[in-house]
Length: 86
Image (cartoon, rainbow, N blue to C red; front, side):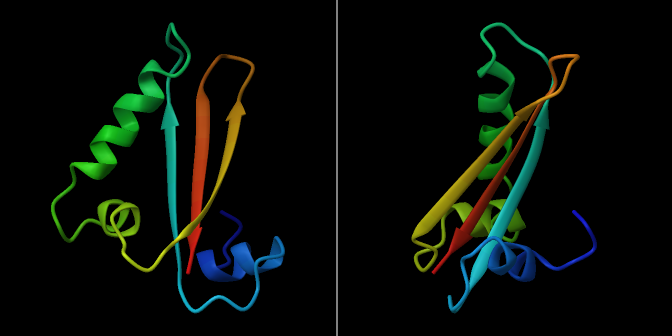
């Protein structure tokens, strides 16, 4: 994150005019297959307590559009962002 709030970053990418937004950012170490650790991080997000922000965003009944960004760094670490808007 560059210091801007999540809704501003999402709007700056071309998704202006939405009434609500959410963001989930995760990092997963190298694994084989590559998605194994990503799956584990995603599972930890959805299994947060009901007041956890990742869980709130992922189970929202108003955030209907999702954009996903994935970056694999040279050492094999996987970084991913899920931006959600209503």
